[in-house]
Image (cartoon, rainbow over all chains, first blue to last red; front, top):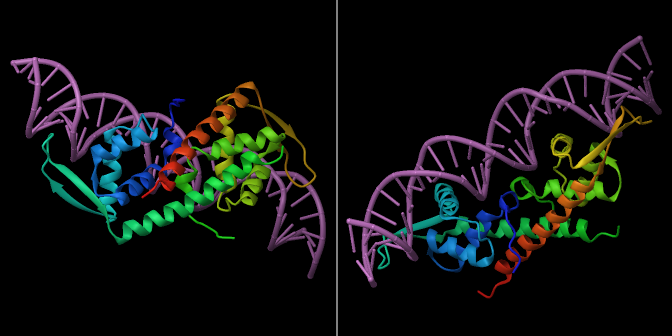
Amino acid sequence: MIVLENLTEMLKGVLEGCVLEIISRKETYGYEITRRLNALGFTDVVEGTVYTILIRLERNKLVEVTKKPSDMGPPRKFFALNDAGREKLRTFWEKWTFVSSRINELKEEKQ
Amino acid sequence: MIVLENLTEMLKGVLEGCVLEIISRKETYGYEITRRLNALGFTDVVEGTVYTILIRLERNKLVEVTKKPSDMGPPRKFFALNDAGREKLRTFWEKWTFVSSRINELKEEKQ
DNA sequence: ACTGGTATATAGTATTACTAAATAGCTGGT
DNA sequence: ACCAGCTATTTAGTAATACTATATACCAGT
């Protein structure tokens, strides 16, 4: 697998959407979300980045938070989307579809 | 055509690549690049945004600049990619292909 | 006691696109 | 002569977002 570095700028504006999508699948927590993103291919994404996104989601009232004990370490903060979060996710994919199709159009265009 | 607003954050990290691609097709200038992006669907992109990108490209020595008179108004600053610019464009598309495929993978994944 | 994996939090930084305004050349209409 | 409108560039300041780096803490195995 090709490993690309310094994806930072390209991830701006899409990482939050990816986190929303991951949360929408099942209630989950920061550390697990980070591992999921790493497994997806975004190997450089670290916990700190995900936690700031989660705090933002909470501040913007897009998620419900539940603290649960863990056998493996300290308590986990589980996140689940609420209605506003699901709506935000929907518009995220709408924007993504639009933007990515335009960019691919530019890329594929006859020279 | 659906018009989406507030694409700002999603354009971060890709707008520069789009500008590089547009310049790679033919020598061109800021105002024309802006119109090209608007026509592509990025209707909210304004000159100011493109000029800051062009200045950055110049500072990073990715382009060659030529000033030419115009019948339609003030002189135009034409931009052309140099070798470093073409290499930057190549890695941009490599990153784009990687990131967009991962995101689509996340999107399409069986629920 | 120590290491390593699990788990969260946060202060500070860099990058990037946008806002908003100024400047200037050219054309056509009044 | 004046003005509006399109063409064309420049730049100071702002907002948003991901990253760096570090601190804290729980638990298991050695």
